[in-house]
Amino acid sequence: MMIVEARSVFGRRPMHRAKAHLLLSAMRRRVAELGDRVEYHRVERYDEAVDGREDLEVIDPTSWAARRFVRRRGIAVLPSRGFVTSEQDFRDWADARAGKRLLMEDFYRSVRERTGLLMRGDQPEGGRWNYDHDNRNPPPKNASRLGLPDPWWPEEDAIDDEVRADLDQWQADGLVRLVGEDGPRHFAVTAAEAEESLKDFVESRLGDFGPFEDAMLSGDWTMAHSLLSAPMNLGLIDPLHVAQTVVAAHASGEAPLRSVEGFVRQIIGWRDYVWHLYWYLGEGYRTGNNALGATTPLPEAFLNLDVDAIEANCLHETIDGMRRHGWAHHIQRLMVLGNWAIQHGYDPVALNDWFIDMFVDGTPWVMPANVIGMSQHADGGIVATKPYVSGGAYISKMSDFCGGCRFDPKVRLGENACPFTAGYWALLDRVEPRIRHNQRMAQPLAGLRRLADRDAVVDQERRRDNW
Image (cartoon, rainbow, N blue to C red; front, side):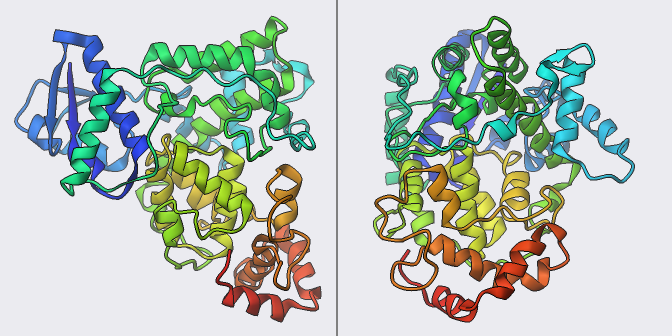
């Protein structure tokens, strides 16, 4: 077996230090596990280790660029792995739609039927396919935490120390640019650690995952989430095994169906779906879509994860959590970061790459459908039927962020106007010509037209310099 550690991968763009640490730690631990069964190369670029070799075969890589790299060199390619369904399975399903939209919910049901997960014969467990409506609870009132035990954390060792020393040296030598904090390590980098993380999630947090999967608390960065996205994306634990373990917890009476179904939908539904869309929509999907005409560069506060100038609590807390952990859960990504970005017209390609680089679970395949499609609506409706945007009222309902904030989510004009609330109306004003044909946006646009202070709100947000 050959493992190649190519330093150039870490120097292409600024990267979160915790992500670089995780990738290197996972590779070097695998090398240590394999011992003399592995041929380990530390090089500047991959081609230094593989060019001229005729004895190599590789699991099909997880990005368009990496697949080109191996195919140009004639390296034997084995089927991709780490997902519940194959690329051919998805293509067969998509082609059979005969022009119908590729709805995630329909795909998810087909995977349930194929795998038998949460099925009773040909019917869904409990009589319903989807418990999403039951899984939208706000956090408990006056709580700073959900009250769950801290997650199981891995123990660091000499490999972590070596990785930190190398990252320090690379940065000092100007070879990489790292942002954010690194340590202690919170995510699994071995199969054994990933299995321990899964066990801990099932025992201590799975029951609360469903009701509070969309909730946010400033004092609880993990909430009831599994923290398994990074080890799954690293190939350390099989997603079907993860889903089967969670389903078994329900079958034995250890977890409620609403939580189990919500989690299974994320793993065998959404995760597989965005993986397949990455290939099915083509390499040009990431750079060829900008339906809302968004061109604003990302601000320095995003690029450097610098929260000093951010006054809005929700954005401050989310980016500060990213700075400390390289992670935020899906609602923070969609309804805080993504919501802010679409309101301010950030360049969707730059935003997509930022999500890849700043999150420990960020990969080239996972972000386009999530960012270009669902979050920024830059694809005009291929992935999501409408833009996922809201004012401050949603954030106020689903978090404790607004209580101590200097901005008021109920106010759209004036010194204490919430940037999200006012920004929502300013966004609709800006993109109205591009979305007026979307029937799902008819009601919000009608509200915009009735807004007596529309021009004043738009002007205020155009001039805003404090957020």
